[in-house]
Image (cartoon, rainbow, N blue to C red; front, side, top):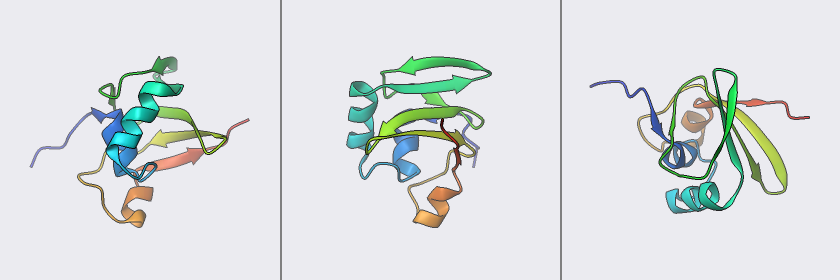
Length: 94
């Protein structure tokens, strides 16, 4: 088995259980302002196929709040909630 170095942002958001379906995650990426920070450079994401890697910071709006999370791992599947929480670390937003 080979470790994946990058994963589509919509798949990762779904695996991390931040969205109920992958379609909802992809729609959110297309329609909302999602930002990805990698190596100190922040860019807007509007394509669900953009690849995320461990160490990236993903920032987006969810339920009226700004959410910033650091990607810790990509995951192999959409597992139970405890497994999903191990994929990211919430960051404080100001």
